[in-house]
Amino acid sequence: MMLAATVTGLKLKNPMMLAAGIMGTTGGSLKRAAQAGAGAVVTKSIGIAPKAGHSNPSMVDVDCGYLNAMGLPNPSYKNFQEEIDKAKESEVPVIASIFGGSADEFSEIAGALCADAFELNVSCPHARGYGAEIGTDPKLVEEITHAVKSAVNAPVWVKLTPNVTDIKSIGLAAQRGGADAVVAINTVRGMAIDIESGYPILGNKFGGISGRAIKPVAIKCVYDLYEALDIPVIGVGGISDWKDAVEFIMAGARAVQIGSAVGENIDIFSDISSCMDAFLTEKEWTLDDIYGMAHEV
Image 1 (cartoon, rainbow, N blue to C red):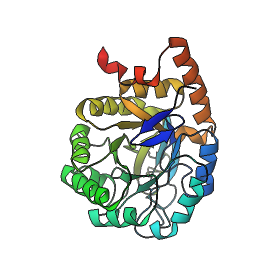
Image 2: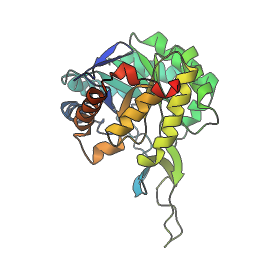
Image 3: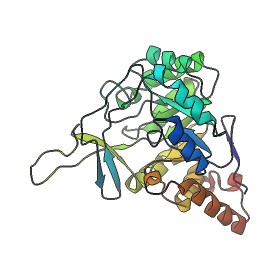
């Protein structure tokens, strides 16, 4: 294997991570993803207070992916450190995904948790007062990033929304705030309607699309951010096989996160790792060789 990577000081056995929101609610499920081959794991987004989330239906299968509006359900940071500690038994980096309604809330949560890194969720497309409602404002993104960076002694990643006119401006704001990396992208806003009744299917009416459908959008965002930023980009969105992961790295991702595809195959991390390793060996390339390769054309 020649897939070992270092991202913001974190040593990964491979560049495939579990994305936030998938199997991230308990330490046991995070450990299971690590044991299935993930190089690092990201928790479900954790907030300031317990939150039930949106009413059901909160997820629906659509063409080429899923549409979900979970509404950031979580037990609050005060009840989550034990799960992070349990996940750390897997001996892979554990990244805490956190969300808040202000810089003070973000810094309070981050300052109270002990994790290997923090991923700031300023990109959830369907939670009122949180996520993308904050993450579309460069000034707020810079302020929140700076507040968290001042509160912790760990790498800070900022997860960006694609639901903006120019994702580079948001990435640059995160970089100005002191982010160690950005994560691109979160889900794309979408909706589904039941034609028998005429009602929106999701309890929240609209949600975020994940899965294969959004990969081309994510690739373009990673490509643009690679050219604009001096900090690493972590790619996520629609990765379903090793070719997708290679494509993201060629676009400029230092590492990738896998979400929806995990639901169909928990072993996807090891499957991608073994196939990518064989591909690189055949080509006589390394991860560094293909990193940002698409920009050299």
